[in-house]
Amino acid sequence: MLKYILIVAAGYLLGSISSAVLLSKNLYKTDVRTHGSGNAGATNAARVFGMGMGLATLGCDALKTVAAMLLGQWLCGEIGFALAGAACVIGHCWPVFFHFRGGKGVSVGAVIALLIDWRVFVGLFIVFFAVFALSRTVSLCSVSVAILLPVLCLVFNAIWHDISLPRCLLAVFTGVLVFWQHRSNLKRLIRGEEARFTPGRHKK
Image (cartoon, rainbow, N blue to C red; front, side):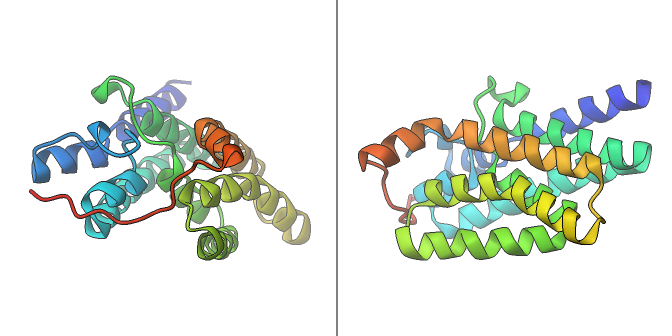
């Protein structure tokens, strides 16, 4: 039980390291959450500061997710792997270090999908960019892959029987959380008011 508590705590604290906030404050002397959508994620970072900033944020978010989940797997196998992933995405969305105002879980969710099974990630990658090519709307892409993540895990497991139950449950949890985090975007999408993605050029 102590190991499980350690895994959840470590996963949450690693997830709470908000890359977008730290990078924007150190590189641009401003908080990304005061610009654009107000979201501390890779998409808003790219929208406000440019693609370089977005990719840097994505990379840092990926590192913290990998660290959390590999630690969980090392300590408690598949259950630890899933618990760490769930805790990390919660920390990313509600970071204790930044007044519980974080991202929407997309970047962390993408890394979780990759670590669950590379085939699932490839499927999500294709769908994300297909939807983006048609709509130029990142939120619609994010909602699409959030719905598809648990579906692909369950389908692939039914075919190959090689995705563990903890991984499938993590996929369901992550998909539901990312979908929930985009509820305001869904309302704007329904009203036809959601903005299309355009990289920014914020000056230092």
